[in-house]
Image 1 (cartoon, rainbow, N blue to C red):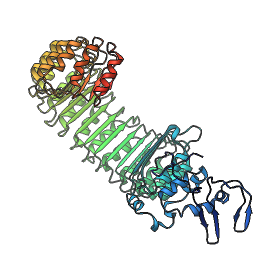
Image 2: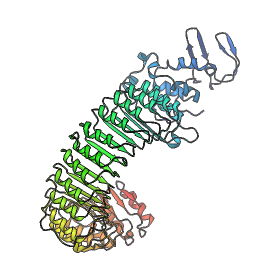
Image 3: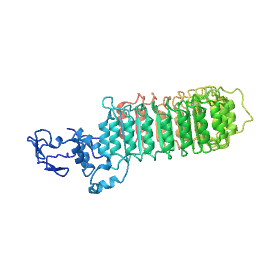
Image 4: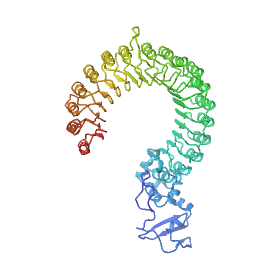
Length: 634
């Protein structure tokens, strides 16, 4: 029958000799008084009776298969090394099952293992395996357990999904536990058939486990999680997502037994409440990363974070609908988040002007602040936060629709001199200003500005941004379909330090004029230009970039009005660093551009010519053959 495993332990089929090879006689010893002799034959089957301790068994199967599982277990655990075990496991599913039931510590006569195997066994968990979908079966896990046991040991295992007919169960996970005690990271995603029994076996055998990831595992309860927590003191990272039977008791076990826990993520677990979160946060003094999302917790849990989170550096709070303004205000004013450097808050009604100001005052080392979909934050809160913080380097606002240009520009003028990056995404409250502010001070430290999909951001606002941010290097205005050449030119003229990365994708009202100015003013520093969807851009842009931008390495002119002449000009340009070029949807680029693309192909690593329908398939094939180092999308 087909083999099941191989020596490498990756679940592929093994084609080596079987234990009952017909090329030579084999003498097997079972216990101290029973022996079975198999004479040399071309086939492993026998036609006569088999003698076992004087008893005649008339059976047409291979002689060793008439032994009960207990005897085979004793035989198999005496196999000297990984190659022999892998070869044996490939004989039949029964043999594989018996071999996978042998614990790593139960294999006998390890002193006779070959020198190669000794070296492999010292690696202690260097292999990684991932099984998904139809390949996720108990047989596959058993094969991995047998095949990796002497190949350095399995260090990381990820199971994603399960075979609908023969899915992964506790049996398969138990085989992994017995054969792979060196396991350090276990990830279970959407495996409803695995429950507490599987985790009990992991807890019993895999004491070096450091990372546990459970997602959509409804059969795993507090008991399974508690067993792992108690037996795996080296746990440093735990993720629990959409596990309906895990609640406060499981988190309390983590708090009690896992003193090294550094990272915890809990999402969409209905049984988790204040009691579990408070126990965990107040006891796990080593926690540095905390993410809580869509939980039924209240102000009490958030206040505990503020009091006891002295080691927390990264905090993410999402969809906490039962936490009010008071909870976040207490969290900020508790003065416990002294080490917090990154704070992301999303879809939390309790984030208001008052609470965001408290966060700014109570987190003296905060460097990255991200606020998403918090509808009660307005200009007043943003400006108060900007004035209260002294360390923020990155500020991101997404779908905060009460914030306007006035708040953004005032905050930029008020914030500390350390601010380096600002990102605004889908802030629909923004409407273009009717007048300029002459009293605002420039933000000299800002290097990166991203204003994406904010349709109200117009020419007047851009001119003000240019005056407030004279040292920009990176500019992303993608999706601002309302801006024009006249509105963008003042900003380009105000950038004194030289722009390096400019993204103007989907700015459909921009024309060649603004790119000519960009090339003239910043050509010596430009490295990336994205003009995807700028339908007024023509060959004049390619000529300007080719003549003035020697450092350009990434150019996207997808869906623009460029032609073969523009591509030819680009290929003869001064830049020698161009590595990525996208011409997707450029219908006027034809077969005539192929020689130019070949010339540029000496440096290109990425070329996108999707939907360039005027380039024939034969020319695409020729390009693919000649530009073998370049990844071509066609």
